[in-house]
Image 1: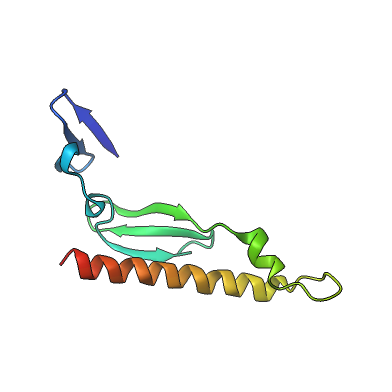
Image 2: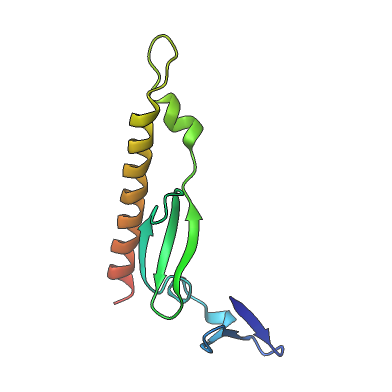
Length: 105
């Protein structure tokens, strides 16, 4: 959580890190590895080295995904759809981690 300090564009995080909001980068938010569904709720988590796990985003698209697993009679294989959603979530987390490793060495 960032709190504004004065009106000089300096933000101070809850750990005391100071950030000039005019020069904030993605890495100011994502400082650790991204993990998917760590707690069973279809969320992406930042494993922040300073403050621990912080939720980044939620995996959405269940309506679309479940309809990908509908048979001719309209029955949905929810177990297969759930596994597929988790596979996509892990893929997205891996892609974010690869970009961070490449861009923020």
